[in-house]
Image (cartoon, rainbow, N blue to C red; front, top):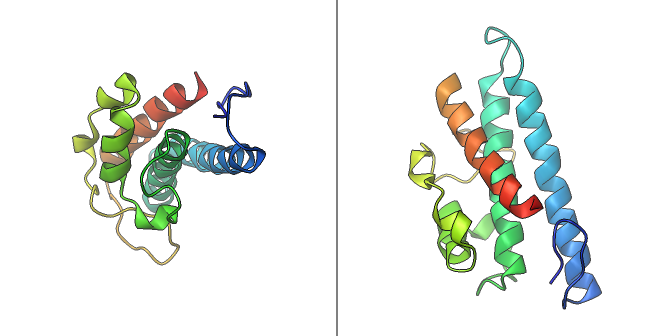
Amino acid sequence: MAQANGNETHSSPGMQEELKEILRQAEVDFDRSEQEMYRPSTDVVLYSGCFFARRALHHYLYYCYKKFGGPDADKSPHDLTIQEMASFCAKHENRIGKIDFDSMHCSRSDVLEEDEVFFCNDVDKVNSCKSLAEQMRQIVLS
């Protein structure tokens, strides 16, 4: 399998490219969330911070799910929930099992589509979600 740090293992070139693209999207979303949350609190657009933090988290989990050969890895990421992917990935990576995803207030709503309107309207809740994405990011990039 491909690893985030660029070391190659035994996956097909197509899978390696797909994993790189998933990781690239996760990084873009994470950066956008981080930029939003670093603004002064009066200027933060919570919808953007929430949306991109949750989407980054979803992509980091999807990256691991695909890497570990999840049973529904051929499905669209839109068809997999954060809980499904986290449960599967925790069986293959102990560090993921130590992350408390219960702190997410939107665990049943995965935001990947632009038309999704659910978001946390509280800086602390959005920062909590961004922290989850950051924990997954550290695991993926290590």
